[in-house]
Image 1 (cartoon, rainbow, N blue to C red):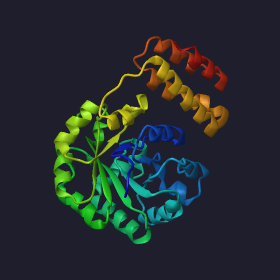
Image 2 (image 1 turned 180 degrees about the vertical axis):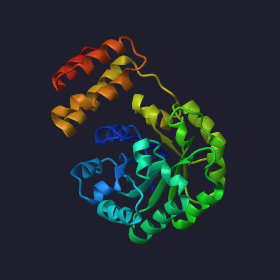
Image 3 (image 1 turned 30 degrees about the vertical axis):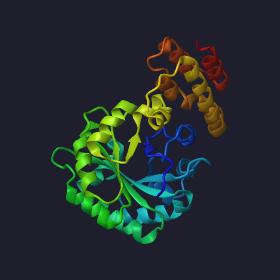
Length: 305
């Protein structure tokens, strides 16, 4: 596996779609990953699932993240989408109740032998690398051991990303970088550190603790996708409102190209992230939330000062 940089964009449901991934890649993300996609939806040829799996021309390499439980369906789904990506990623970290109810995502950390079997089975049938994204454990009684990570490696896993929070920690609890450090020191495959990296200064801290080579950025990229540029430049930057305005226009234009008139509804959540902390953000977001079409959104963005 070759990456254009050591800083990856985390897969985030309803956010890391094709337009946003293009922006992250343009800023220097070394790996982009699809939103999580159900193995059932791929197996039953759901058009929405295959739309989620489409990549941009600049997304090299690109991973498709699958979630589910049934091993046979995992194999069949992976075979169907293998040609569309460079890496197949298994989601073993999503904490959302709906996903857990389907015995998928972080639930797999409660049945670690089953997760190992999924990896072993995929490696028998597909030629592309297989990676796994995990939480550090399901709960305090089910924290991942070194033996578990070793079993993943021995099963053929080509790379493991560790979001060093428990399932019930969701996205705001403290991050146990020492857990990642221990795993990184014991595995031969690449270990990607994930959780709480929101600046170059934070990256330096995480790098010092974990000794990892690769890092995954999630929530912070939604407000400032240029964080990848900052990390590559080894310096945090502050972008003025004019820069943010142009970034929003570029992003929204990409969304119109992808989604047509429906883009104005889908863009709202991104606008809130971009404008967080800026003057008049509350008023601008109110206007964007109540917009009726794409032209109104463009007018609102162009009026930002």
